[in-house]
Length: 141
Image (cartoon, rainbow, N blue to C red; front, side, top):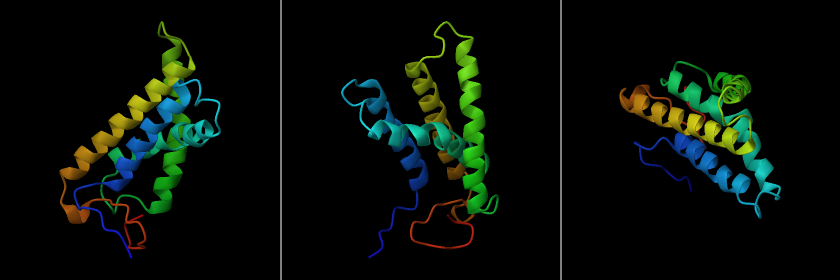
């Protein structure tokens, strides 16, 4: 049985925001940050999610990019974004610390995911990029 999500919810962006926010307690709470779950949530936050949110905000139409191109650009952008944000932090009074990097990456990722949602909602539904779980339609993940 296949589950259907409401048309106005972009499940990929919801998952990006949820995954990003779930990472925060596993880094900041001392009893949780020694668990392996910290790595499971932390690696995607550094290596994939910021780039995915950026790519989702830039390429909102289903015909803009292929699924594999979105994934490749998401990894590549994240690998470029993370050090640049760290470099910016280096020139602030806060410096480069784990908490500051977590906050900056989380704010960046959530902001661009919300921006992607806003931009997607302004175009016709048939032109929007959607991630259809369990479907292999052209123009969809």
